[in-house]
Length: 146
Image (cartoon, rainbow, N blue to C red; front, side, top):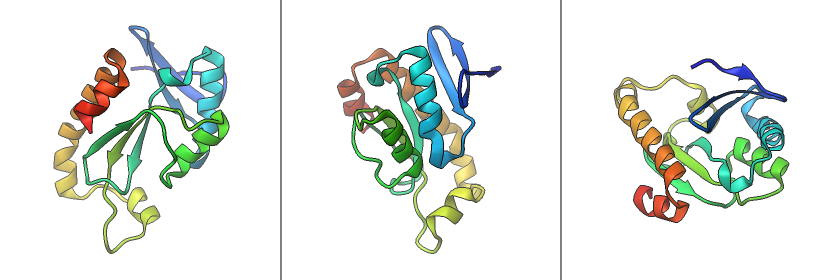
């Protein structure tokens, strides 16, 4: 899938009416890219889905919400700040904080071999959750995913 530069701090691609966006900012400043994207395409906030990692969920666990705080995730905090709203759907993917490492080191480290083996299933489940979000009301999706 080829990404093309957007009108702002992001690359994107479009297929079947869906837009996939990859920010060009650092994670802690992703709100700038999301703001640029949402404004260029004139999207209502309920029509975007932020997909992010979550240290506080078990590895591979998915959790979808239609609104809420950043939960300590700096990238999501940036999105909330730049869009001036907590009413932004988000899909969190658990990466599980280890007991013996700090969060930053863990997030930036490669996957452990046993985690690597689980990635294809996690990616498949994430894709299914995203397509379910596209086709169903978010309350229905939350009842199925969470």
